[in-house]
Image (cartoon, rainbow, N blue to C red; front, top):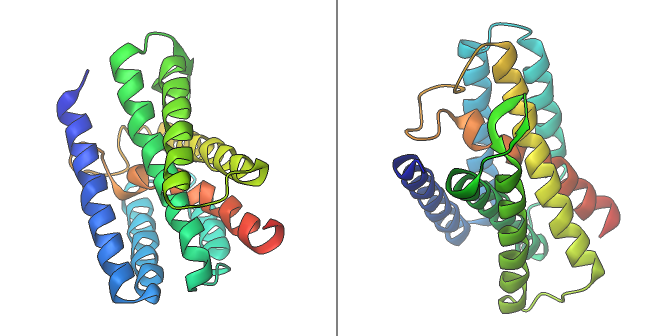
Length: 207
């Protein structure tokens, strides 16, 4: 297993979560501005590194951003938003760890490093850990919560594949070399970009 990359990915996740919770303590709106910065960095990466069909990933990121700004950042949604962030990050880390540890069966040609074992390992561990976190946060565990967790895991995975496709048509291994061990901001937040669309729909129109 690539332990160095796994440790770097985990370290970046810890750093991001630390910045996230510091921003949360300062002001709820700070989270909003933090994520806007991430969107801007992703667009810069696309501009400098994605030369083929550049407008397609730009439109994709723009659509994601529209759904993001539809979310009203107020106290009542932050428990759900914090759970959302946890699901996305935990699925990313555990699917990577599972794939590198026990993965042997390739999943899809778009992203040749992904394995069936990585997908199911990430899904199972992320799902169970999200339920445990919900229990400790005193979130009511019911069919709606289970559906929410499953939805975010699924859309996180699809978001990863979408970004892998954009890299593949541009012959890129990483979206950039900005983040050691996990090349680029687009790479690091690929799951977030797609999953946030469905979080926004869930919060605004379903929940």
